[in-house]
Image 1 (tube, rainbow, N blue to C red):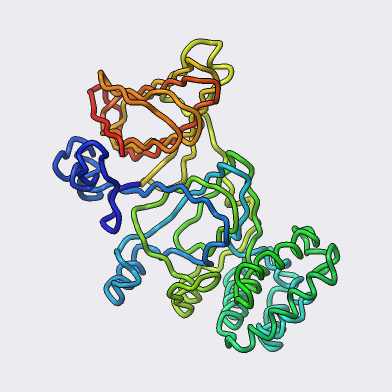
Image 2: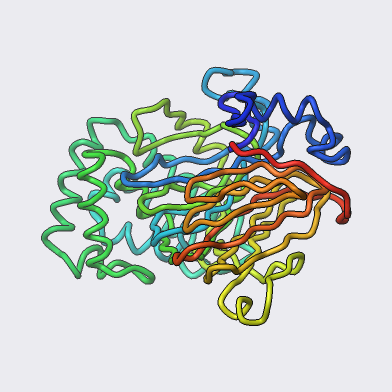
Amino acid sequence: MGTHPSNPSKDLTTGRTLLDLVQDNQQLMSPEITKRYGQKLPFLFKVLSINKALSIQAHPNKKLAEQLHKKDGKNYPDDNHKPEMTIAITPFDGLCGFRPLNEVAHFLQNVPSLRRLVGEEDAKRFEQTVSGHEEDSSRAEENKKALQSAFTSLMNSSPEDIQKAAPTLTQQAKDEGAKFAGDGGPSNDGQELADLMVRLDGQFPGDIGLFVTFFLNYVKLEVGEAMFLKADDIHAYLSGDIIECMASSDNVVRAGFTPKFKDVDTLTSMLTYSYAPISEQKMTPTEYPYCKLNTAAYKSSSSATLYDPPIEEFSVVKTDLNAAGAKVTFEAIDGPSIVICTGGQGKISVGPKTEELKEGHVYFVGATAELVIESAGEQPCVTFKAFCELTGREDAGGVSGKM
């Protein structure tokens, strides 16, 4: 959902793309956002339903994106960076960011097939460098170099070596069960990790991604939980339904769990190799203050929750209207929004214009428009509103259109 030229949203009434609409009417975007980002939305809004692991990947920063696009426009279709935010609609699991170093060292000691792929020399060098200094900030650069060396060695393993090592790994998982990999390491359950190995091998037999798992945090999100990924953060989404919002880019550097184009050299050189527990990437949502929930009775069972990452391109508000007749009125903002309904039904209004709202319905809301969403029926009405605002709020009217 957005204006990215590879697949812009379309207005169902006119058939025109959203890119055409906002280019023809600058007031839909606001002059400030047009000046900063051009006549296009600065964010992409997605719903992902992950039944099979998505690729191990990272998204380039702005400078690297410009270089990759100039060098290989086919595989890197634009010159923008792509920080992104994930909000769980159902229970979700994935891999995100490098584990704390003591966990990587633990797996090198307890998963023989992993150690063979990394190589004894690189494994020992990693252990000697980080041992006793895993949390020493003064040694961070040395630790990162050791982590990069070990990870790059793994990623450059030959396909033949990976194919030989994978059955050994999955057999270890089946044989050890709850005791797998030294009981799963400091932050993982052994049985859970063993089950994960078997599951991933069933989806991508003999894939390098099986071994990458031991370098990355294994994260689980419950409904409503969220995490933020900076550009150059390595990750892989494994299962669950999520709302995803990101800067408007389609650049992906892949290296595992995929039949698509892989760019191992770019991936291993671009990563920051920051290492931390997953708790540092999980977000803390807050109440969204710039809206009004109607009546005390409805307010007690309804909410508007803000997910606000540390970038300016986007934020997201999740609204739960848990009773028929419950209503939320969003103050006008000086920037564009996209609203999607993920559950229930009701109506959505901008000024005198009102449209039916149901699960899967998507709307664009222009800048300076007051927006009203009202629930109907027995099921809770759940919406997500992605928006960008660079200045203060206005009281003028606006435009909405169904996509």
